[in-house]
Image 1 (cartoon, helix red, strand yellow):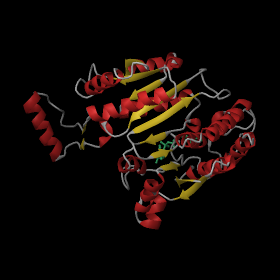
Image 2 (cartoon, rainbow, N blue to C red; image 1 turned 90 degrees about the vertical axis):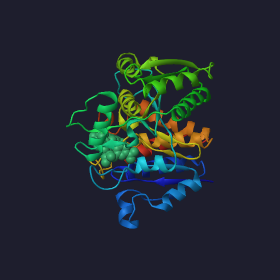
Image 3 (cartoon, rainbow, N blue to C red; image 1 turned 120 degrees about the horizontal axis):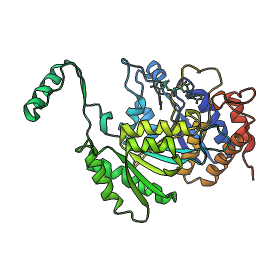
Image 4 (spheres, protein in one colour; image 1 turned 135 degrees about the vertical axis):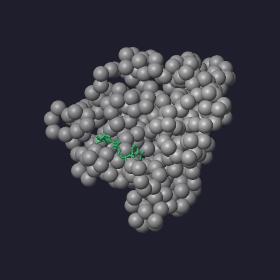
Length: 357
Ligand code: NAI
């Protein structure tokens, strides 16, 4: 048996988690769940959105799968997702964007993996509030040192990009490409404009690429990448990006393959891995049994592969592919021709397609 920490999350989280659990249990792959609450529910029960025992469970099991957790805007606790990434040093976010036959899309044959750096860039939280004494000091310093006037009505976010973090994520991307027999790695940047942050990213990425001559490599400005994705997305394969560009481009890629309802993901560190769908808690459709569970079910497939349970992962992905190709059972977000299927009915259909041999 392999024990995995399960955080169902909130909003549509419990619905898609239940569907995922049923599919994985039906595989008979020997997965045992250790279920924990995080987010607003954990504040009620334990006075902490991410209680220590949840982190301890992940540290013990090394692998977790989670549903989405609502982050309050402006006030309240900080994002559970950001906290997990920091606490467990999950430096790589990986989002495979594979277009399954039968899913409505403007394109065909899309198979892109977005690898996003998870720990620095504008996401590091070094921010200066408009009009604050700290920003006044910074404005004075920048005017004095660089003769550059920052407007008094501006707020400022700082963008650090280090050699170490860039080498770690680009090495991860090349190793991923080798292990999964991918054609090439494309490194996205804007080093022509941000010479000292994206400049470090580009130079460190190029250096890492020189150690992987057996994997194709190209560098591309991120605006050009956006153009290719809208025009000829089949040209891209594994894409490696700093935090902010990675966030935007991975949602763009989710849009190319049928939307958030079918976009799985994982956050990987040296010691731990947390699997989760790309989507959020979707409060607009929560509690109605209409959310698409496929993104979380496919995230469980990635988890099984990570645990070297390839036969179970193949079985799960094959069953999802069969349901999507057949097109009879479709949740509302995949534009069904007839009556849309409930979350639980999508899970039933996938279970019905699993091979039992
Ligand atoms: P969202 O992804 O929850 O929803 C965006 C749109 O996509 C909505 O129209 C929603 O109904 C739809 N949608 C999302 N997942 C779907 C699914 N499985 N099936 C069918 N339709 C689906 O993004 P939003 O509204 O920006 O965020 C809501 C909350 O989720 C926020 O508190 C946010 O912070 C949190 N969030 C949590 C994440 C996580 O835990 N990993 C990731 C992203 C957002």
